[in-house]
Amino acid sequence: MKETNTREQFSVRLKEIAGETRVLEQEPLFRHSTFRVGGPADWFVFADSPEILKGLLALCKEYEMPWMILGNGSNVLISDKGIKGVVLRLAGAFEKLELKEEVPKGILHVSAGAALPLSKLAYRASKKGFTGLEFAGGIPGTVGGAVLMNAGAYGGEIKDCLTEAVVLTKEGTIEVRSAESLELGYRHSVLQESGELVLEARFCLYVRQKIQIYAIMESYRKSRLEKQPLEYPSAGSTFKRPKGYYAGKLIQDAGLSGYSIGGAQVSTKHAGFVINKEKATAADIYALIRHIQKTVHERFGVELETEVRLLGEFL
Image 1 (cartoon, helix red, strand yellow):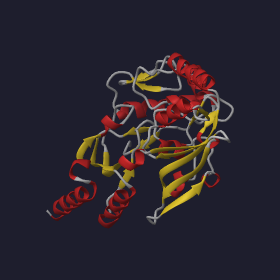
Image 2 (spheres, one colour; image 1 turned 90 degrees about the vertical axis):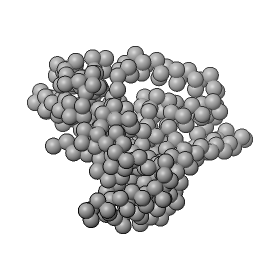
Image 3 (cartoon, one colour; image 1 turned 90 degrees about the horizontal axis):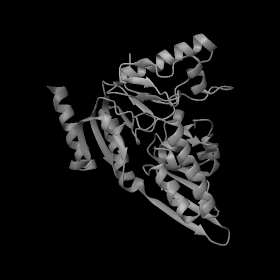
Image 4 (cartoon, helix red, strand yellow; image 1 turned 180 degrees about the vertical axis):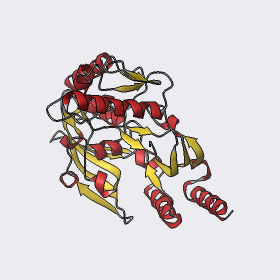
């Protein structure tokens, strides 16, 4: 009874901080995942400002309640068992986009909230005639997730144009980190170890003829349509690129193109993608990922590391 009362008190206080309509209980997380799988979150809470976010994190600390941030759900595999505790979604003030142009120098300074879709940022910049984010036009994640993972495609990466990031530290202070201090590498930043949360990212872009920018983005769009299984739910590239190899080619050469477990399948269009072909569960997808890793290692001696992050219990 005491535990029940404590959870009820916690739920009431969540709603006091975030707002009654901004707290969802037992929210199915498949609704918030591009894989379209995942069990419920105990609480799914929208944080609309830095002040609300800090209040929510302080409350979780007080009640010793586990919590995590979920962006667009585009690079994660969420367990069928769901997530215990609080899943936070940044919204409101975290979706801002500010553009400041230095006309004589042909420079665009961008401030983007962590919850802003990266593709939206890329297209807004292109309409203004500034280059540097063309590669991001088809990436489905948020700005915050892109900084965390140093998102990239077609030879471009976030580190190429990021100048600094505003973060919330574990101590609850808001600080500015230079791009250099984030040590951005292939699908990695120090934020993955430090636990600091990206609240805002700042970029520097340069002027270019719009027709050239549009041509580049259109070529990337056509390439994605031709080579990626966009017609099925997935989390994008399932594995990181191993040094000296391409994950998709290794998987195809291992004879796994089209291989299925349950409703999960290795895409026949691009073997580097695991897709939700037909009502897959997270367990199906996880089992297929493990089978791919085992098979590729046995055939070629190469360890495939997942680019997709696992959230929740899988064992």
